[in-house]
Amino acid sequence: MDMLLALASGIGTTIFVTVFSFVLGAFLALPLTWARVSGIAPLKVLATAIVEVFRGVPIIVWLLLMYLSVVIGPWRPDPLTTSVVVFSFLSAVYLSEIYRSSLMAIPRGQWEAAHALALPQMVGFARIIVPQAIPLVIPAAATFAIGLLKDAAIGSIIGTKDVTFYAQEWAKVNGGPITVFAAAAAIYLVLSIPIAIVARRSGDALRKRVMG
Image (tube, one colour):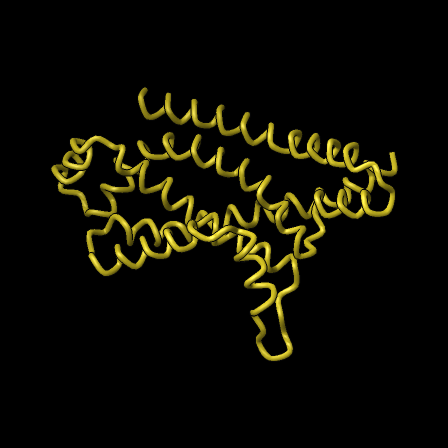
């Protein structure tokens, strides 16, 4: 019981890092996606370079790089801040790719229909293209969110006090690493199941609404 209580003390941090990073990343991904699909060559090249550079470097390297090298006067980021910032950028990069691929999956005829209605470009985009793209975005974004929940455990390397951090600390002091990490795995599984259920139901509902 003591072991489970110790692990449970890290659930709040695990959820906070995952949710905050995902939400912030979802917003940061919007201008990144726009730059990639805008047709403006310099912006497309810059946005693509940002995506490829961030995806090409292991996340643990970004965490250590920021945690060890960012110093602004007397201030340096604590482990939690570092994790949130790095995972927010990670979310922005991967979600921008999800947004972009979902937009590209919309049939060209739908884009032409939006143009033919003589609506302002952004209005036609918002009313015709976006509602069709959202059902495509949700399953992929949910899969990413589940992955983010698990990847956020890497933050324990720099001292972010999440479930994995407390599992490591318990194993160091009390031994029994197999038992404690099996319990940690069960917690991550329990946390990820609701994401999958909500995503599946909302995706189905939106798909029926768009098609119906």
